[in-house]
Image (tube, rainbow, N blue to C red; front, side):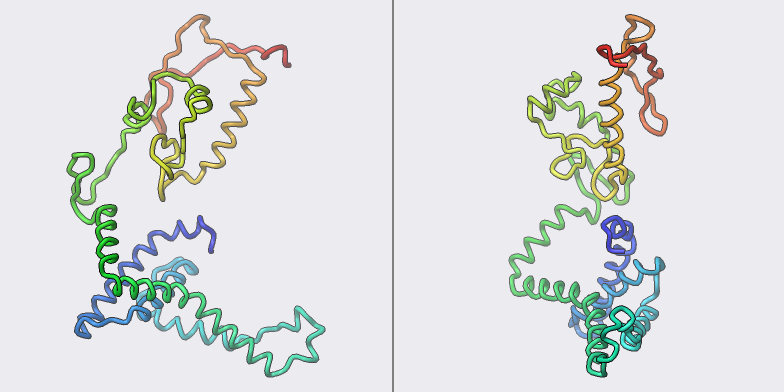
Length: 275
């Protein structure tokens, strides 16, 4: 449940939960003259997110509030059968140890929710104490996360559009790549020392697998397979065009991906006497 892939899968649930957090704070402020308890709402939302990750369903707020004491009681009342794991301790396990284990179970529940919520509370407290930093953070978020119509590169972007990125505009841009139309990977990447971060983390110059939260999950597997197959084919087989002396058509057409307009055919023979 705590793997990075599982956490990414729960993006939608987290987004809904954060919306609920803002709604709860606004409702509490409206009912209390603008005053809110940050920790209480934060604990609730963290628990809300964890329930969604555990059970895979969205629960209403009333159900979540009922689940909180239930999970605490389950942890407290379950009899920890430590003597099943360490039989040697069976004669010496007493009430004191059992009480200690019950306290530990309560601590586990607190660790799951309170740690994250407490960090949030401390962070908000610091922002209140340092309004200049709060203002700078707001400006940074506003400039990074579009909340309405915005402008990117001189183009007006409306709310909720479907945007398609024209990748050749990046991969064939002479401002980014020298001689981008020329196939010369050794001079470009090895000797030229140009960066080619295909994950898009450090910069967006190549995006064969996409980038960000929607990056292809098969990136690692695909690159391993491509490297292995290409290296073995180059090692073992020499290829020439077919028909002989013909020019290869590098035009493409769109299917599920962009494929060669004319399927490649090649004449092959063992490379350098290797059989």
